[in-house]
Picture 1: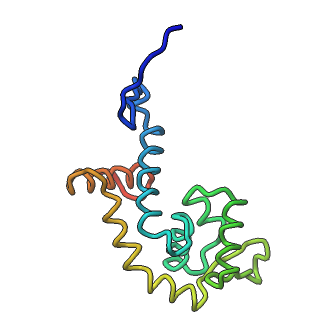
Picture 2: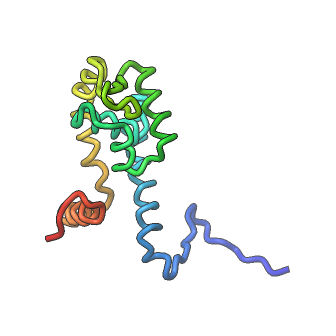
Picture 3: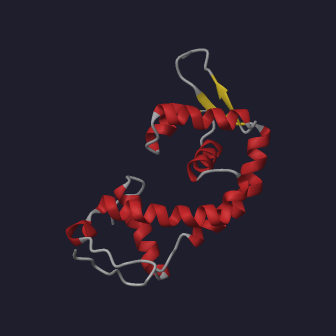
Amino acid sequence: MNKQVLPKSSEAEIEFGEMGHSLGLLLRLSQLRVFEVFYEKLSHHGLKPGEFTVLWLISLNPDAKQGDIARRIHIKPAHMTKLVSRAVDAGLVERVIPEDDRRSVRLRLTQAGERFVTEKKREFTTYLADENIGLSDSDFSELVRLLRVFNGMEDPK
């Protein structure tokens, strides 16, 4: 029987080969690292990253259609409905059904939701600086700029 002995390190070196240049893989690994920081710094609020993002977007876009927000941040309609329902149950968001379009759902923050976003804004935006894990400030700024271009949030230079 041929046994291989692994290094005594807690993390063995794993070869990625060509997959080490896969944008999807690199983005996924990056997302997981950033989420670890999010939960370490902000888990005491009981929110997931997507939940605060939705609250933030609603605060900046009152009366936006639920479906428009979901499409823009690539959340499936069923997941967005659950996420919004949790925010409604928590008293942070209200759904508005326009008289002229009963099929659409528009979202706005309640007073409690506005207070929550206002009170937590500094803490959540300060966390954004903690997302820079191991890059120089200029490299991090360039990475963010390139991702904004990639996601259609900014025109390429």
